[in-house]
Length: 585
Ligand code: SIN
Image 1 (tube, helix red, strand yellow):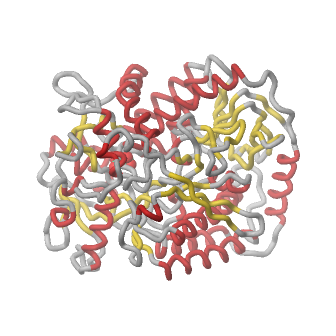
Image 2 (image 1 turned 45 degrees about the horizontal axis):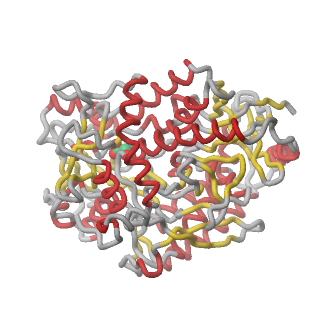
């Protein structure tokens, strides 16, 4: 078996992985592995912007940003981590600008900023322009810039390699097993530090803004290696996905003045969030849309969607600030947003939960915060937790940049200090992966990936979406357990080695059923409503019992273990407005 050595192996080439790589390159030998070409990473699909209290378009402060983030999270975010992120945001944006990100500009020449949901000035007084942007292609330009910076610093790229497992010695991570999708070869990447930056997992839901690649591979691998997943019950539905397709229509459309209307033409958000209306946080807007549909006030013959009305914006404003979404609406629905409202519905968009990690990206394995030596997790696969029960729009790109850099710095310190040589490699993990792939390809009976994946997506959509209840969640846990068994027996028809995408999808599906069970179990356990987790049978937030993070462990043989850990309230001990209270907008 071929073994390649790098000091650091980063799995995932989105913004978090690339930002960490840029920090490490030149100091240590760093490689980035991705199942995609780096420029196809899903960070590139982020449209509307990246938040920072620069104050270019009105007074702002990092503390106001932190307050909005904590309140938006329904008080579940760890407050120290939020403080770190919001304080670092202005510096991080200027750094991106200096690296070459072509931000949109104000007349004055400063970086332009737009309003986004839940971002306010003066602790909730009025919407603030805090989100920096490059038209509606912000993720795309940041990704291209960081890829260029990585090439400039000679980061080694392994594009189209699928990670299969971690290598471990004495409980410490010292490499990964991966397969080269172009040849089918399975090999080991030996390393002193491994970073999981594999992104989100929205592909387990039928309607999603996520790309095909967002199958939560890092989460599945963590579970297989005894690492828990934190706060998995909190899954964000973005209010405005294109009707029946789920493709993202950026929140910036509302930031620039777009209005949501029901089938009767009414601006219904006035009812649900009287002060900031369409710019309420996403959990509230998505729930409000479903309420409208429940009351029969949807649009179209089926009354199953609402309308995003941009007709109040000028043709020039749409062309300059929202060109992507203008083209999506025209291409996919034949709607010109200058002339007519866009049919939209909530779409599964973002995972607040993930692999527990600290503010330096170090993975922790229990409620005491014990570290998994040699392993870091950053970006959407990680749960730091800065987003708690609900993320504010445009805080995601910020999370990637801030914690990607911090992990890079931490790894540099670790490598300078800790060990001179990599831990000896146990190639058993590599051989096991070869045996598993062979067994999968040899099986002649069983269902195909497609059948099982469609059933999973239907179950998640039906029982584990915006509104949940005990009966539905119990059904989901039972159904997913059966899907895990079916996935363990599936067959792969394609016997080829070169770009065997059926085999790739079979591997992805094992992860999908496993993390989906974590989502359903954690949602069933949490007997309250908080942020994106809304229980019809427990409609109130219950801080007395549930101001806690959840931890889900996978036990071999299909079982699981559920634990809790405390929420950090360090800002609340200094500023009274950070003490948890009812959220009003
Ligand atoms: C959007 O532009 O609405 C998506 C960006 C984000 O999720 O923060």
